[in-house]
Length: 203
Image 1: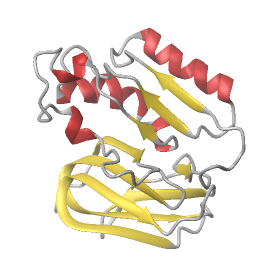
Image 2: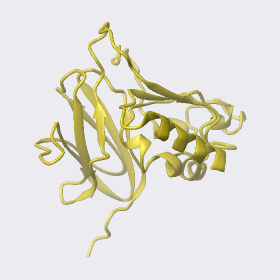
Image 3: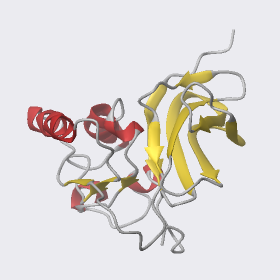
Image 4: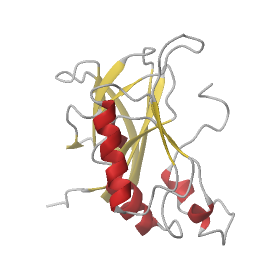
């Protein structure tokens, strides 16, 4: 029988706007990509797909309502790889809408230390059941050289099972993500892992 894909990275949320969200994940086996989503966790009635077979999955959900909570799962055209009630996101409000919005900002986070885990757990305790509108990275996300293995162990391995499932992620690279400062090229792994706005599509 064909191998069943296991998750390496994700799922995680990118380029969140008032009407769209990008869902990304990586698997051990190449498949096409499918995201089922909806405002009711028990009835994910909308579907977005990417027919390209790959281990790196990027699917954009569009036509969403502003400042609305959506649930989702991830997988392929033949199976659901992952999905539970912790898989959700809140779309952005219409720009200029007054309100209280919560962001969690971390820097120099990717070192797989007890401090990193404790910081995450303390934020979750402080935050309780409140929704976080975004997670902001100020750089140095994977020590010490930003390799793919370091991202897996020191970033995704720490955050993907909880906070990355429901906080839209806005990343920035630091010197350690650029091969510990030895490179400034966009060929370093950081640029393969994240989708960011390129034409002001997020406002």
